[in-house]
Image (cartoon, rainbow, N blue to C red; front, side, top):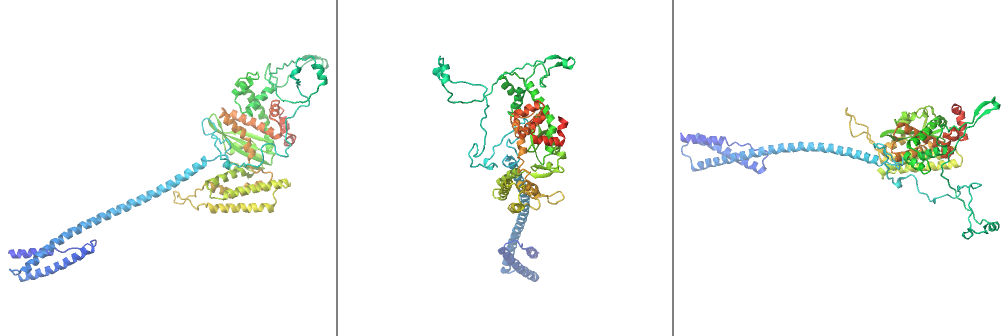
Length: 599
């Protein structure tokens, strides 16, 4: 029984020695497992032979073989456990590999998102720097570089790079140029005062009278000065019983500006207006200046004087409007202002002969039309690329070349390697020089054979710009429906887009000599106004902004007519409104029917 049990155990051991060889094991281990399996198969075959003989006594060789089989079986189990451990390790490594691959994919996705965000922030940063770098040399900002967004309304000036200025240094020396007639100090034919100068030794000499008969004036020198003194005039109105009028009572009339028992005269009122409008001086400082002349003004009195002048200026507005509507070419512009901390907009409409400045709360078309000039105008309007101007009906548009030249400077600054902005500026300079030469020769426009090469060069420069800075076909971002968005264009690319769209409007100054090269007339109309904001900070009321704008319109219109500021202010105070217009403009107003309605 014991022998049979041993044989049975040996058989069970042999039956359990089957080993599955893992494909993941090294080649040496796989070869060893193959040898063990072959030996096990041999031992199993011999065990079957021994069991079949049922021999009680086994030879020593057989016992040794059984022991070897048992050892091999133990070794096989050890290798099997090692194989299972290796398999589990491989599975763990595979899982770790998959997790790392998934984590790596997530990191790549986040990296792409961060890259896109960084590109967007970089683009915004460039746009921010581009906007902050705007000044009068590379944009439409005026030299005062206004910043009306501040609550106080103060204007913050910016330092401008002189290398970008459109004003180039010439070789001329300062002062009067050769050939210029000039005008020196003009003297009266008869002096108002005479002063005789005698030698010091002659002072108190009894022979002075006789010496004067024999002496002579060896040199004469003149001074021109003004006398500050208070001149009080007393007006007496006489009353008579006129025998020529059936003994009716007649009175001597007072001047129209003498309305009460006492008032200030026209000269001191003129001085107040000139100090306010040309000196840009506050009421408080005007009062201090006038006090040195013997006039004790309150700020309220000074305000009343300026208010009365502004009301009279409103009576001249229809004349200026009629004169502007009769012009062939008008310039239009707008600039920001401030009324007690709130932003407003000043609009000006200018010609060679007149200026009209208005104040409005809207910057767009409504503010422009509120001036009352553009509704019926059918000529040429010179302006920058402010889009509301293109909504004006029945007008022809012309673009300001100076604005474009400044923007070309900025485009070249942003991308120094691009040559097209400089080439476009050279084109403008060449056309302007050609225009001046034709005007000197009496031509009304540049000949076509001379103009066509410039137009062709214009297109070539745009092609050069497209090659230097190509516009992407589609944008990087997608819409909600998955379609690509329009590409986001840089400032230079948008500038080229405008060049392509408005070629005729940009080059109109070369085809029509009535059109100025730039819109500098409109910008000059705002200079005193911007200076006022620099000094005053803001206007306290909208009415104050309107009054200042209208008074400046009158002074600038009179200047264009060839009159001095003193004469302009005096004519308005005396209500002689036509005296601020020259004969030519009076003829135009008469033809328009504007004079009979106001005179």
